Length: 433
Image (cartoon, rainbow, N blue to C red; front, top):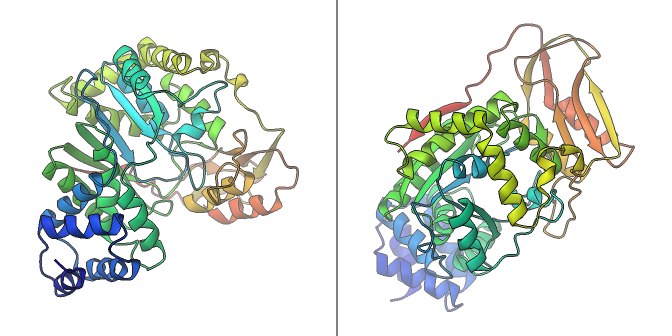
């Protein structure tokens, strides 16, 4: 088998076999296939696409390039959730304890964030003492005991994907549905889950700006998961404005606590109930999504979800008292109000601009080497459709620096104020199974 022949075959729009795809991925991972040939292959895929069989084979070849997590020692059906990212996306912090509180095992492998705010691990480290540095055995034991644990991602999970992603980044082949879908799904499948719920974002703050693109990506990932024996479904949700009110690590932890108490932002609560209901259904705890939702709502009202969060934090070294006293979370030195310059209805909040503003404060990482300030961030006081008077607060900036002129300008540029009431975008566009 020669790489040049396989590049030519894909260039001409022909279907590659499972063995040919394995040859490509194994050769590239072991450095016997050079970057220039893999670049040509990625470009051929970009223009010619891949069939469902090719996408599944590519995903599995990347899974088999490194470690695979064995979760068979954990009782029950393990359901994982993946979000394609966004601004103020606090869903994992809510969903973990919420779904675990009704008996569904959540064995979560998470990473650190590169972007607007930290990843799930960064956010959880806003709780004093919390640690993901636990052994595999401790991880399994904690999930069996509490139905919830979070651990850092294995260093050798899908090395082929890491290598190919870095190449795609510099060869203008990132935005390819088969390559994006197989990249995401390879990490989910290597992480050992039996079933997967995908939250695919669309809008200004999402990777997929257009709904049609988001639908195409969601369908591609669902097909890959189902073809590889993982029960998979996707929810397409809105990211034209930030989710919830908080953007920033400690701020998002506080918002997650509020949501588990039943007092969180309506959009965050609703999305978590929608995603959580699908997780409970896929885990076989209920026979309908409606029954699953009732279970989750009862867990919030009864306080079970909040108690699960406390136990989870405590058993991974964190201070559980923050749940009852959020002032123990890191707090920024200054809270600076950004006032409305006009009277009217909020017409738009450009999510990715708000995300950039939060990152400039120190809430996220511009590069892997950047240090995160867990206390800083942005709290929205008005969202799309809300009425605002001139001088009323649009946003509160939480900062450890007095001069926030650049951040304030970005926030003002991201908001529009309209004279007429505007239509609020739907939170959930559709489900794909």
